[in-house]
Image 1 (cartoon, rainbow, N blue to C red):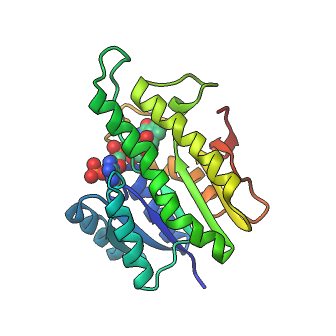
Image 2: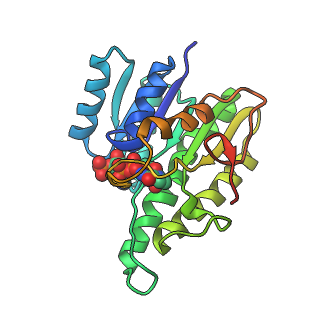
Amino acid sequence: MGRTALVTGGNRGIGLEACRRLAKAGLRVVLTARDAERGEEASEALREGGLDVFFEQLDVADGGSVEACARRLSEGGTEVDVLVNNAGVYPAEGVFSVDEETFERAMNINTLGPFRTCRAFVPAMVRRGYGRVVNVSSGGGSFGEGIGPVAYGASKAALNALTVKVAEAVRGDVKANAMCPGWVRTEMGGQGAPRSPAEAADALLWLATLPPDGPNGGFFRDRRPIPW
Ligand code: NAP
């Protein structure tokens, strides 16, 4: 039976490209977005291209929204085999200029969001004996490469820590890895970024479809390990 992937923040940028690539690779894709209109529009465009994509509303900042999405999918008979935690925000302020609300928002979306979706979808993967989790992190969350702006850097470093803990907790053919997509031309990355979303999606697709002997609990860019 074909696999199903769920992507957060699938309406634009790297998330939208991930949906396209996963669907082209033969997976059924649940494109999720916090805004129903933008999400429906994005999934409709992919369906018009002949891809097996459908939309579900999911705001990763809201635990109730994550639970409701998981319930709707489960009641509709959809099992999520691949979870791509892509939704994110990039507050660029420095340590003495960022306000507490902005810092909290980054933690809520970039760290607690994936925490919520992992808890909603990964236990069922473990019960079924198969699953792939791809946490879209950043070199800005790496102590080895240099932490980025404080709220973003802390939230992505914490996402890396979450990745390690999920990877330790899974059993069977279930894997959780983090990746940095590089600097990508999206609303977040800006038009001066050197990489296309398609280039970024390559490593994402690789982690989403790893074979049973693939890595678990790693941090990658361009399919190669990078320091935590
Ligand atoms: P983007 O173009 O700004 O897109 C961000 C996506 O996240 C949008 O779909 C946005 O939805 C969604 N989102 C934000 N808050 C959300 C929430 N509460 N619930 C659900 N979705 C939410 O950014 P991108 O460049 O594609 O980035 C995707 C991921 O790659 C992020 O995790 C980012 O940190 C990471 N990354 C990007 C770069 C880069 O250079 N671009 C580099 C390193 C890492 P709306 O349209 O509703 O706002």
